[in-house]
Structure formats: structure tokens, C-alpha cells
Image (cartoon, rainbow, N blue to C red; front, side):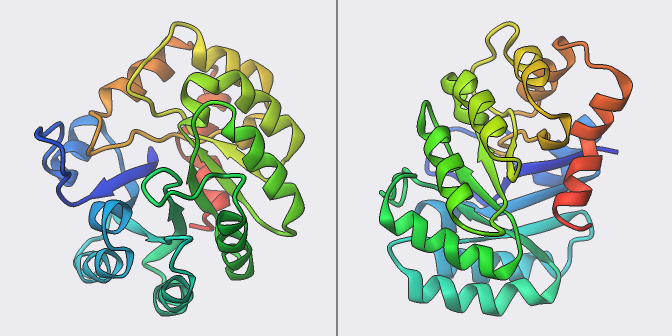
Length: 238
């Protein structure tokens, strides 16, 4: 069983097609379920993208959704959280800090994550560099909030180790367009294995990148199983 907690649905604005079919990509790599956000919602219009994804998910068995939230449009975010989370097809919230111009340490993001905490659902938040430390601080300040540090800080993965140790409600997923040797092994050795997830960033990045990075870490059976699906099942109550 493999659950991809960081995937996307819909076309990108980039002039490339890394993985143009969600289902074909999942089949190629043996991914059983994926939790996706609508690219339209992430990069352009959150309500329109959420609405389109909701319609698409009605005919999908293997995909679940993130409600994408723009911290600069909180009234729309509240409406979408109320509309989509109770239905069961959406199991979490996605916030991209860069596309929305809402840094992790900003008041806007803190307000958005407070709304998320009230829903009881986890949030996947884009992190890069030391911003993952800010995310841990925000998580500690908001009771009940559970957050996934998207890309586990990318080149700031050592900050991600510190962040996860500071807050046991912060989870790490590994997708990144780079794959430095030893990155996954170092993170796994440094944090509670209950806080580790698997994510690919498909369809923007081919899943081979994340698969190869995790495989190169030479993880033990129980740890690999936690990362592949057990932790995601518990976090998203699947």
C-alpha cells in the first residue's frame, strides 16, 4: 500500500508535461491512493479550483482532495471549508505560501491555520528553507492544529528535523525537485517515525524522484511501511 499525500490534479502553467495523467502515473509507480489539490486553486483561483476538483472527485475512487485555502481570501476559505470537508471526499487543506504571498510567519497564515484547526483536518503547507521552523512555532501556538511541512523544507531539511522534534503535530513529506544524497536517511534518523509521510509532488514532478530518494535511504520494513501508508491513514483518518 502506498498513499501519496502531496499530489495535484489539473494542468500547470509551466510549458511542460512531466506526468500528464494522474491515474496513469499512479499505476506506473504502484500508488494506491493520492490526496490532490487542484492546480487552478493553488496558483490562480481557490474557489474555482476547489469547485472543479469536487466535481472531478465524484467519479474517482482512488483520489481524495485538499480544500485549497488562500490566506488573503479568508471569507471564501471559510465557505469552502464548510462546503467540502463534511462530504468525505476532501480530507485536508492545502496552503501554498509563495503563490498566495502569505509567508509562514505572517499573521494571514496564522489566521488561516486557526480556521483549519477548527475543522479537525490536517493542513499541507508549502515550506522552504528555514520557514519550516516558523511552521512548528505556529503549530505549537494553535491548539489541535496538525500540519504537514510540504517538501520538509527542501534544502532546509535539517531545519525540518528541528521543527519536527519541537512539535509532535508537525509531519514531514519528502518531495523535492532535487535529491541530495543522504537527505531522507538523515531525516528518518533524526525524527519520530510517526511523523513521516510519503509525497511526490505529482503531476508537477515525476514520482520517480521521491521513490528513488526514499529507496536510497534503505529503510527497515516497519519504518518504510509507516512512511508508505500507515502514518497517512492515521493522520487523515482513512
